[in-house]
Amino acid sequence: MILNNVKKIYFIGIGGIGMSAVAGIAKAKGFEVSGSDSSDVYDPSKAVLDKYAVSYHIGFDSKNITDFNLSVNDLVVAGAATDLENPELQYAKAQNFQIKGYPELLGLLVADKKRIVVVGTHGKGTTSGLIAFALKALEDSGFFVGAVLTDLQTNFYYGAGPNFVIEGDEYRSGVDDPRPKFAYYNPDLLLINNIEFDHPDIYKNLEAFKEPFKKLVSEMKEDSVIVYNADDLNVSEIVAFSRAKKVPFSLKEQKNYKLPGKAYAYDYLAAKITLETLGFDFSSFEKYFLEYTGVKRRYELIYENNVTIIDDYAHHPTAVRETLEATKEKYPNRRIVCFFEPHTYSRTKETLSDLKKAFQSADLVYIAEVYPAREQKLASSITGADVVKAISEYHKNVFFVSDKVDALEKYRAEKKEGDVVIVMAVGSFNTLVYDLKKELGAS
Image 1 (spheres, helix red, strand yellow):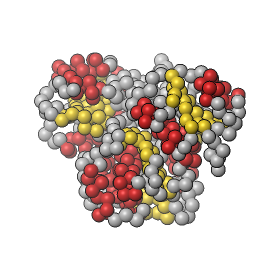
Image 2 (image 1 turned 120 degrees about the vertical axis):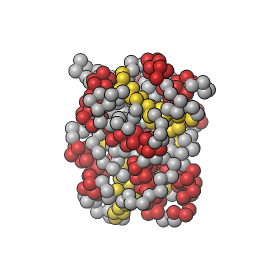
Image 3 (image 1 turned 30 degrees about the vertical axis):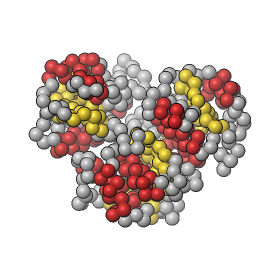
Image 4 (image 1 turned 180 degrees about the vertical axis):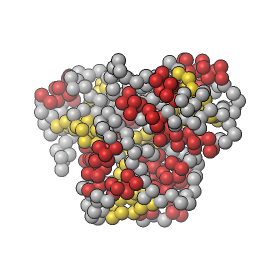
């Protein structure tokens, strides 16, 4: 096994939520860990690194690696956003150190566990978090989820139990590794809840998007299991490529627990069938379904008083539409106010025809500038104003906000008692919920 002779692991970009979690798992397994990031590290990553006493540097410098005294058997882990000109990455290559992305390392770290991998376009965080929450309580099993579980205040745990739950992302693994992250997780049980086109910056269309899922299921062994949503045609098409045992589920009668809407009903049903497939009776884990409050930034209730404030991560048109429909269902007699920050130029442009129709369950809509994430802005890039114009074809109360100050000023002028304010943001607007909470006089 590749980790047999490894004693030290160095993380370039250790401040990312995934990187810090894998660093924490590596430290929990006894490896000596260090790393660096370009700027200050914030929670939840900072809390993880502090908890596990992982030292790290601010700023990239090859001296950081030389001071860590790596041997040729040790590992360097480079985050997916690492610049190819990064001096630490260049030094590691020049020294012929083993360089991996964190998904590959994670797969190696939990190779001795039964791996439960949750994939799909929507709901991965909520569903994998729910399964993880239940399994930690039932048998002390571990997990790696892309967002912090609000009940446990962490996005990972390395437990003593036999299972390990992983949220399987379909995005590329590393700076020069185009393979999807889930390609490294070797699932013993794979859960597929839905498949819909996403990430147009690396997949040109739906057929291209489905290919890595087909490869994943086709490589699973006959004694492995796929739990899948039989109501989703794309999912049903994909699982046909596998020799694994198949356990379908369909939404007929499903108790909705705390989170509203059809999408969350599928998430809970998927988790229920997965746990039953693992051999647990519903009576043994229903209480954890009732206790579970979700993951941070996935329909997270931030404030409930004269105004309700909800923090959400929705950025795909389907997630936006279904989340707003669910909010209208949950609060039928109240005004729904939505702040939305479009995520990446490529996704926003590619999905605009669907995105412009996604806000009809909201009464008042504010659109921020497009958050570029990993993309560069060009003269031809779509703008927040373009998004406002498109939505205006279907919605009369949609307005552009240039920044968080502008957002607060505009809402201040329109605020009404009983408003339900939902903020859907991934980038610079992702703390707006706390600014709104403060605006309402709450600490």
